[in-house]
Image (cartoon, rainbow, N blue to C red; front, side, top):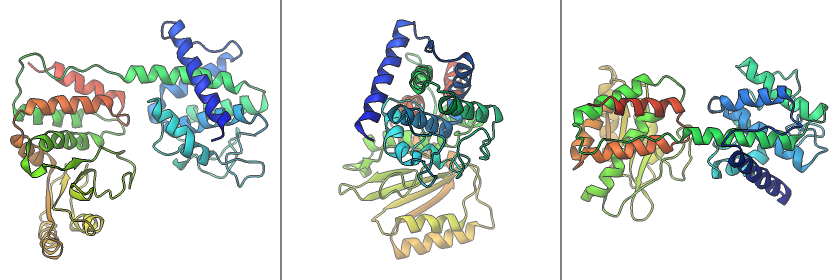
Length: 375
């Protein structure tokens, strides 16, 4: 990003924070922003957790127009005549900026969304299959307003940033893990987790079991001699393959040399098969992995069990890694028995749910409600 992109983003972001502070945390649009454009931005930002691709593309487009006023921002690919590479700008600079400010963002780029990567200009007739027709119309109307009606991209970005900041603050849900002196049994913890997984219906719920097992590992690393000197790798983005170098699973513990020592792969609504075991081995076989778990919310079928066990035996003989295929909740119960004080797990799980940027507000509110229901 040229200096002008960075300077303009920082300047407008700071201005957005100042406007909010002066108006009791109420988003105030610029006077030269038409009411219909305010409504379009409101629609998108009020649903931002479901339209992250459009979110990144819009911010990228606004910033590019501010930095290069002569650029037709509807021409979002360099291969288009007169176009620019929106994806490159987003990946290298816009997404990192949004994440640094803890605003909602795609992991890498909005252009990784299939409906937005199509090789057509973002005009009012754009053929990309954006599912929500109202969101699609608002997205295209905003770009059309800036490009064909001399709309003010800076005013759009200022108001857009205000809305993203307010959404960020809305996500900061305060959850008290347990009341003072309150004790909770392992069976109660398991029931709470099962209820949390079951009650959440929005996209992203598959990360909840990953967070649960990761929170357990945070406890185990501190307590078990087996993990002396070992390092729990920070939890990555659930939808991003190869997010970490040497990534062998959803959860990973490295040894003193930074090599993978133990890994866990968690399958949500997907049964374990011998092919899954073999695929996992392909990821770990070049490393000195001591133990590897494949856990699923679904039971292993009787037909698959012999082949799974055969694959596990072969891996142990060839590599030495102990592969364990098991049910998720059975493993969680076992793990919790190894922790000196299971209440600590509740604290860590709660904290991880609150800070996770991939989870939806619903996921956090439901966990808060479940804890409040405890007697």
